[in-house]
Image (tube, rainbow, N blue to C red; front, side, top):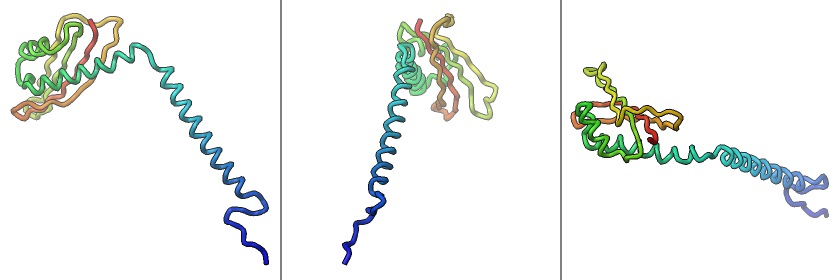
Length: 146
């Protein structure tokens, strides 16, 4: 009587084929990971590394202005609050547009200073802010190092 062979094993080497397939998949995954890591390392520059904290600062300033209710104030009131929050080595510009039907044409621009960035990285972002009167505003900001 012939002994029963385990599954995936026969005289043609099926077990070796399954092992080779597993090895090929593992090598493919490792190659994709190595290429991804190489691209990430190659795209790193000191300018991009300093951009992330600057963008976070911009979002934080806009969020604090929203919490303080600054967007229901005039441009001068917003500018005063902005100058109190913004660190001295940064400049920032805000473009605030109303998203309400009644104030559809209302658009305001607030700048921390009159200087324009030249030959510098400028971070940009936008978020929706709500005032205590439930008015919604789209706030776009640009932030740069002086």
